[in-house]
Image (cartoon, rainbow, N blue to C red; front, side, top):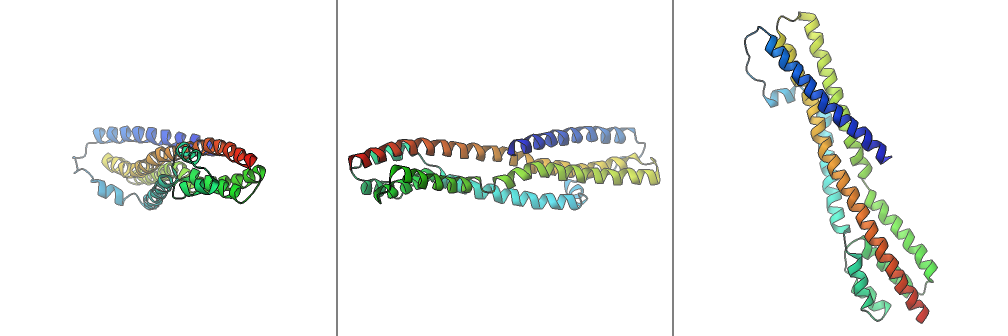
Length: 246
């Protein structure tokens, strides 16, 4: 699902950039070919005001995207930890209670899952039961790690679409105006196109950073999972050995 969204997102990012270039060239050609006297350059704020409803929607999307990025950044900063270091500390302890105390204040997803495993072993659960408990906890942690990533992925795909829709509507209005008054003043068409292109630019400005951050978070999630699985494998060997001795 995410892979197909990425492909769609990349297609629309490319389409949006191409649309900007082509329409920009058309706008320049219209300005160069017009006989009307040069007007003052339209400011970015004026073009933004003419962006219309799609630009307002993109403004909301940018706030939502930024909120999601900050929330996930804070989460992954807490979720990251070194399972290898935790296993080393556990190996240096003599009992399960000591091992539990050693990693009691450790942060990260791996530390939480390891505490569940050690607690279960200390309570007398069999290795098979411990593995079932750990698997359930890993699933809960995975759900937390993937939280809000689909929404961020949606922003990557949706924002260029909204931008292109806004630009298309703006250009339809511009050509409708030309159809009504003729080409006596080509600069009006060029100005309308410039204002319409603000939507595409805004959509890309939201989607491109969101795509980069989404891929970064996905990589972070995979790294945490791999680290946790490696640490848990070593811990289960230690717990099985400890259970056998008892």
